[in-house]
Length: 147
Image (cartoon, helix red, strand yellow):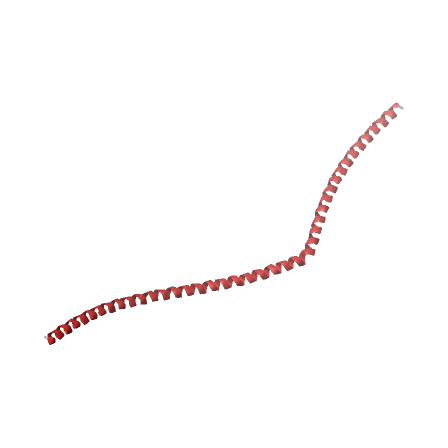
């Protein structure tokens, strides 16, 4: 009987050891599954946030599209304005060049006129000198005739 009891006790310890081992493995498996479950919950929360963000974007898409189109129209209008301004700058530059050229030409003509005036002034002085000489001669002849 003692031998049976010892065998039973030995088998019971063996079964108990296997149960502990199985329990430990199951505990580890449960912990791993818990970790996987937590990871899956976190991933699900992220996916739900992404889905909500996608839904929000989908709802806002028409307004965003309209805003984009308005910005594009505004940009095109500004590009037209820039082109107009560039053309104006080119015209202004061209006019400035023409004015500078005309100013240079006017300066040249003014110098010619001043030179011609100086020549004429010289001739006038010569003529006035001649007139004075003629007047002196006339006065001299008049004087001599009266004598």
